[in-house]
Length: 238
Image (tube, rainbow, N blue to C red; front, side, top):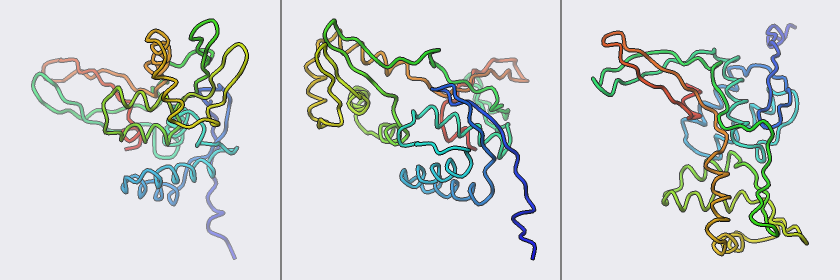
């Protein structure tokens, strides 16, 4: 008996993981996988969304990716590559002219996305002075989602993100892995830093790599130029 699933052959594509510049191959996701993701997105349940992304990554990419530890921008970028080859490379979007309040439909071409602020060589070590430094890591998807729904002030959100993303604290004589310390201990370490040292750490977060789409739409009526800036995961999936 013919197995109908075997009648469908899927192409294979190659892309790069932004943070490592390593090539990785993948296949498009199929309808049943897209359905799982759409249900998760509609639920707005963080654990369900992350679970759906894990499932798609595990089945579509040629090698296992640990998305719990990968930088968030890697996951965004790789997911958009999947979306392009699975659902098409163009997304319809609506832009609004701030001068006239008119709305216009235009296209976002996903092939033009970039990872903004991505350094040629990633170095997450920050020297605070001659004897003290920290090794940072980029936020994971779960940390990024957790921070985005944080209801505190921008200062509180940034502080919590820094606490979560300090990987090591080092001096000339020792290296302290933060997994061995409580969040409260790391928080107290930060609170007791001089201002100039703390600013060196916040600079790292103010320039985090981010998947971004930038373009410009010229209105057909008045020729007004409307800048387009999109860096929302949900917008890339529509």
